[in-house]
View 1 (cartoon, rainbow, N blue to C red):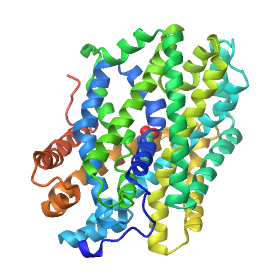
View 2 (cartoon, rainbow, N blue to C red):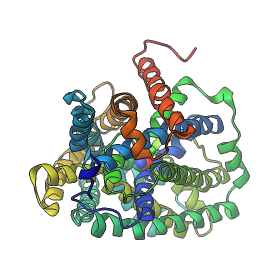
View 3 (cartoon, helix red, strand yellow):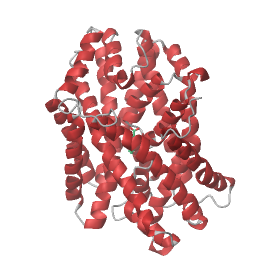
Length: 458
Ligand code: PHE
């Protein structure tokens, strides 16, 4: 296959730094700033954080390497990558299903993701108008509830997110994705540092530090362990076709192992810094860290509303959340757009338009499930929750399991070795062992537990 190796028809990243920026941009998103703090709050803090860090290190990083190597070896989007690789390995053609699963997962995540990104966007203006300053807790939670109750409002904000996302992706890898991450990621980082500084000065900082880093294992439940594993996949953008596709654009001579470690480390640091920005402010105002999804949209505005310069820093917070969401949103649809270009031969702009129409239609159903169709439930969940649950807790772990099996058992050691460029080192055997045994086992235990076949809660 070496002689066929050219660049992807979509182009490639200008440098390995841009790749790290783009992959980190994908990884850092609502998952880090919205979800990580609230699930940490719900699961008792420190001990949960430790489990999460272990999952990132021994499952997340190896799976990311597996995905990037799939993309990099073929220079194609997930579906076509799996077709080529299975040919190369003389493997069963049905493995193409893994490519479909990955691409579909990213596509579906974007539908509900753009609704939440829409909330973040809307909140830049709400916070900026000073609406939260001095407002009572009831008033602030009413703002959130009212927004959810108005279908038109939700649909408008989510539509803006989708149009903007596809406008970027429609420009291509270098002119679109790359330009977006070049500006958005430094902006995000600066805001994050400012917010941590603010929280050090105005919040109960040490309480926040203790909450995040002092493990109390009596607070940890089996469910918490599973949530940590699921979130490790989500936050690193795994099993959604993203890392395969971004890997296809990786310049030659870049170390897949080193860049994966760098991306995972950057993602983790951002999640922890987001926690350090949020919890001290929450504690300083005697609020609870375990309010669930409302943590950043209700609890945090209540806190900012009571604090000096709260309007300014509150607005910055939602700007940061929006930037983080955009650099992830563009990555979620890139695999589908790349596939439409490869398979159907559409020009990029049109491919983005086609992909966007479907996303918008499903996102519409997500948005309406908070109001018009809020009574319609399946397994006690509305459509939005079903999409979230189905992708994060079923499709991503299943994809992760298949990626581990595929790269460590189906592909030849010769081809994975030549992609990872780790030679016969310890590093290679560690990767192989983790992917052959540890990852599949961890995911299977998680599924069995979810099906209720084994009870880890005892
Ligand atoms: N990693 C992103 C986040 O933490 C979400 C995401 C998942 C993005 C899967 C791309 C693919 O918000």
